[in-house]
Image 1 (cartoon, helix red, strand yellow):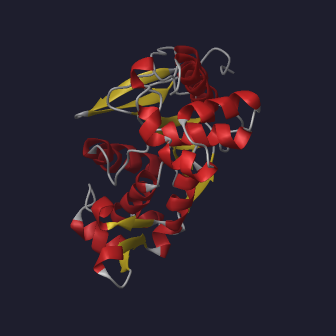
Image 2 (cartoon, rainbow, N blue to C red):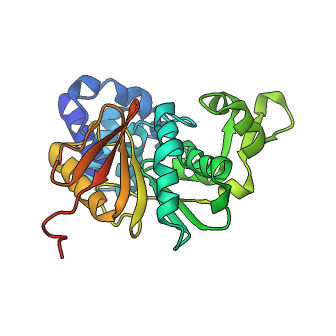
Length: 282
């Protein structure tokens, strides 16, 4: 039976490896979310796992615990108002401003299994054919190597495809694979896959990709981040945004940094423009 000290250690591992600060009221989630990890490692229980983490600082085991406890909720075109805003305002304006360079760089942070990243690519293919021969780079990153591998494969169950993806997008940008109904899958077509690259990155530790981005989607990522870590990440994001770029957060999130970001309202959605700071002037 795990003790309070065991749960404290597990929460600390998650915080240090992923930035997520779990409240003790969520300790019950460890049992269900770490069940598969316990089976794979041959550890009999959560207290055995905690003992193993305490006895030897196994970085791979620590990462596995953090990845298992990280929320992986996603879907195609999640929060439709955000994609309506991208289609009607943000992408048209950005494309006009990039006509001379003919290059667009977008980043989907904490992309999970890749649906948000591919949704961005589909919007560009569907509504902005004038950029089909541009240099388009859409980066998706996630702390979970398992999720990155799923995103790179670009294969989804019918239940995942049916969530948020309009029928005409499904028929145009995915192809049906699998011979039997019980293993039916849909795979993203190659012309959409080529627009997207996926990388394992921890937002709280180590290098982030890569240069300046025209747009960054950092949605529902920082809900359980401590304030100091949230501010550190947003400062890095600010430096990575082009001066005329945009930041999109989750509907219940805001940066709380009025010297760095200005909120812009578009219908039912909000995005943030980076402001020039004193250190950037001149």
